[in-house]
Amino acid sequence: MEIDPTLPIERTAVYYAILARLATAPSLGIDPVLGSPAAYEGEVPDIIALAQGDDGQPDGSGRVAPYLALYDMWDNPLQVSRSWRFGGTGASYEGALADNAQETTITYQVTCVAGWMSDCLTLIDEVHPLLFRWSPTVDGLNCGRLQTVGQQFGPRRDMTLGALPPRFYAPLSYAVTVYR
Image 1 (tube, one colour):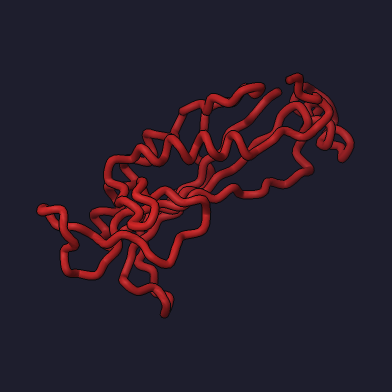
Image 2: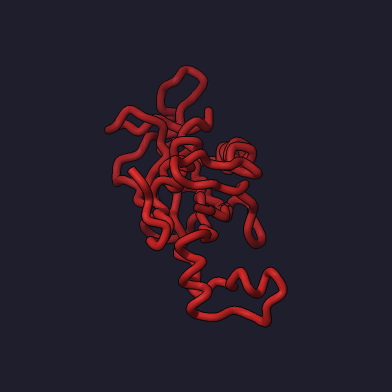
């Protein structure tokens, strides 16, 4: 099937390629309902795995096992056009829309979460090498290497009233340029 080059680049396939790679992080808990690694598509279910002790049983703390959620951040559609990058005078609305059919930069946020700060740090240490400078493989698209975006922060304790059991989280941001 031939892809119409005038249509915007489909983001979904890139998203799922990244999510599949993230699901290989060794310290992820196992979703108690699905029985698969706890790598979620943005929305975290109400029932999540609890932290386990060395014996593989819940450790009694009531804290959550490591999990992550992947979010597709909607980028500004008025991207700088190719004419600017190759010596032109600046961005144009028409140029940005035309480029969106041929290339786009997509930003993703991976939120790493765990009941214990040490488990959250371990998950961060697993996620970063999985994504940083990795190029997703998607039929019909050429994907650049994922790069970090903005300042990355270490784990913070979720202090919202409904955040029980206690948990630590760290949002990590990556961007990838995708070409047709």
